[in-house]
Length: 229
Image (cartoon, rainbow, N blue to C red; front, side):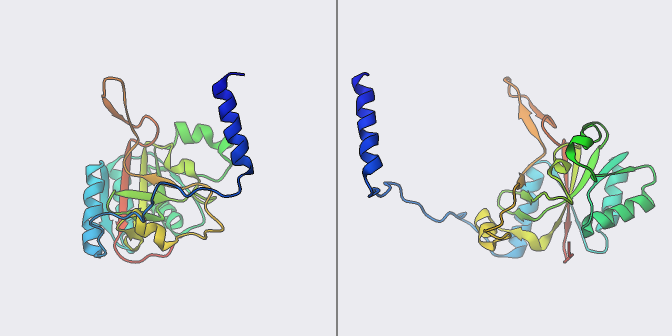
């Protein structure tokens, strides 16, 4: 055994029996943005600006008209197949509207386990409709919490992800979002998805390509009044 290894093992042995733990030399502080705004109008304008910078389309709508907005997007993008979840108000209203008015669009429901849905998810579903739990204004980030009604693959596999967000769920910063305690700290979600742009990657020549590892397009329908999900 060489001398360096012996010294390391001696230090480990000493630390193992040492009950006192020295204080960390690093100091931590509560993080927040320098210009964190509590003004709803400012946060909304910043959020939309960030989304646009990140190549995310934004449509402002209302509780009464967001389904018409969704229908317009489906027709404008010529979406032939749309993936939907189940058992929440967003999914139910989207299904009702599209089944009634988008006759050329086939509706696919995520109603089976992933293993049985693979081919459908990767080869058939052109677009999906999902709902955002919250959003962060200063980074233009959407927060999705997948569950059995909206599994995580819904936002990852189709070419186009249409996300429905309530303005009331917009926070100025990540700091504010964490303070809001959107989930029980004793029952944390098993998966949280943060979306700040369509999927993108660059090769060794730094040529940017979209859609390599997820949706090529992300579209947000921003509901400006209240809607229960």
